[in-house]
Length: 190
Image 1: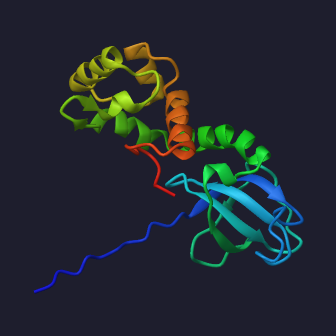
Image 2 (image 1 turned 90 degrees about the vertical axis):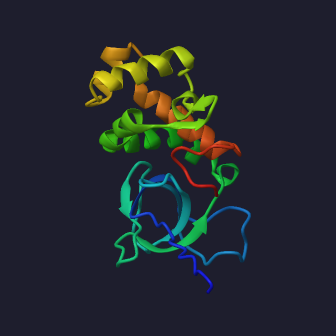
């Protein structure tokens, strides 16, 4: 008997625009059809994407657009995933504010991460992978969540005296996107 592995593709539903290129991507003659191209970041898995824009539609950085499988209003089709090094300079500048918006929108999910995270190896906990959280903060978080789970970032910040948890998560997401890290907490490998 052979066991079939079900491969489930994870697709983004929404994305934030990082950069709008009205005349296409420079230096890609013949690679893409003529027309406007956007670089964006998905809101669910922090996937960096490139897409063609419908004619007549003008998008600004940090606009939220639908990129799911159903009919899309602003985007004609997704060109594909891109790596951090393929982002334009403007897209890299808009990356941090976009990730911060996503983290604040999904605050409940990230607070749940702080409440339920587990050790990755016998010597390293998932919390330690977040920049700014070392052994001391990790133990403070583990002891505090044992007494009572965290409700939101403000509660976490008050009880642990940790500097802005949302900014620490943003730093980790950027680190995961920009380098080839061994452990990925919030993103998928590109």
